Amino acid sequence: MALMDRHGVAVTLDRIASYLELKGENPFRVRAFRTAEKTIEGFPGELDEAIADGSLAEAKGIGPAILEIVTELVQTGRSSLLQELQDEVPPGLVEMLAISGLGVAKIRQIHQSLAIETLPELEEAARDGRLAALPRFGKRTAENILKGITFLRQASQWRLAHHALDEATAVAEALGRVPHVLAVHPAGAVRRRSEVVRDLVMVVVADVAPEELFRSIGAGAGVSEIAGEDERRATLRFQGGAPVQVVVTPPQNLGAVLVQATGSEAHLARLTEHARAKGFTLAGTALWEGSRFVPTPDEQTLYRALDLPWIPPELRETGEEVGGPVPTLLERGDLRGFLHCHTTYSDGTDSVEQLARGVRAAGYDWLGITDHSRSAAYAGGMQPDDIRRQWDEIDAVNAMDLGITVFKGIESDILADGALDYPDDVLAGFDFIIASVHSRFTMDEAEMTGRFLRAIASPYVTLLGHPTGRLLLSREPYPVDLDAIFEAAGAAGVGIEINADPHRLDLDWRVLRRARAAGVMISIGADAHNLAGLANVDFGVGIARKGGLGPDAILNTRTAEGFRAFAASRR
Image 1 (cartoon, rainbow, N blue to C red):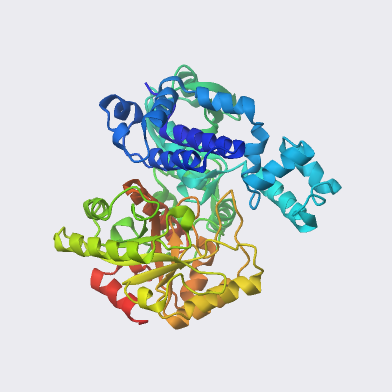
Image 2: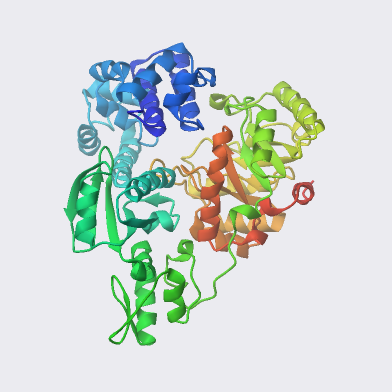
């Protein structure tokens, strides 16, 4: 049995890389651990089985030394190398790497000049002026570091959507094995497909009283602690995991309990008000009409009793959805094209052919390859000779008649002046171009907006990638006038992506309707760096649904020829 799961191994490899970086180790060794971290995070199988059958040793970036470390982590749950590094480098310095704008060189300078080793010490130095007095720092840098520390503390209370979903799935499987459990339903923000999640909430349908069920859970299921809240709720702490709120219900109350546990607070407040106006009372565990109990075996029954259509969980956010029209929402099966993926030509781990075969096997009809452009040297951005070799390879793959059309694309950096990363004669050879900002995030709003507007004016730009630059729980969006960008993009026929990498989910669902009102087509870009990145699309679909978007709003629902026509319309 593996003592550390895939995500835990990936996090540990990333942490080792950070320690090595702070020690001043060879950059190639640091990069090797970062590459291995990506490979492990996206690895499709069970690590213990892959170690045993030798398949992990064949994965990109998993050489003998790293394989030994991964094996130790899986078999023992710990790393002797990480322990050695923690003895040499103060752990607080690694925590500082999570502060946006604070890189290795500055952290070393802070440590060497001020003997600072922890976040509280860093905060104190930023407040008392010692940080601002350091060479190449100044007052503005100190203020930004203070903001970064505040952001980091707030973010520590939350988890990213894919991590929350993994935890919820594991908890549901564990609870599902408990006697007398009939069904388990993840609820809360996970069910609403929110981009970040603070609390895990599970609804358990059981055929025994809650207190008896909690006794059964405590006797197994990997639970280390149970704290009761009331007769139907308890907070469970699983071994090595975060607390989980569990609500127990008999089958006849599932609809009412699941609605309450799913939220949001604004939705429940409006729904309760609507129920009262209809002569009903929506209590925490049941629906009542006067003194008459109304069975709600599912949510549809509850909404129907209140003369409402069933409202998809993704829409239950503001309360305005109660009593309003329910739009037809995008489904995963509506997608025909797969956009925004990286191959071995930049920082991906699969070849063009491997991606084409994998994407086709997942049911897509077309694929848009978008490796990094040359300014993204950190990601192995392509030089013109690389581009021509990749184009030849794409032509060869298309000639294989795999049942999928592969388009020649690029994720071109938008340079500081708004220009793209290659001359026009190179840009003209691509079928489509995603234009993204990957540098100079500290521009003010006017500068950053102008940068985007100049990129939109290029006839070669098909889509804007991750337009606010945010990294959830890690980096705040840069300042930019989204409405100005929507207006310009809509007028020019430039689409904007929902970057479906769960670290980004950018555009934010809250602005999608404004983008559509300006005439902007939306794409879902997986930002996949391997075939495991196919799963990112589900998070992008969730964000599109939260934004109320249907199939007609999404570029990926078009045929290959429809996508080709969209991209060619600006040339």
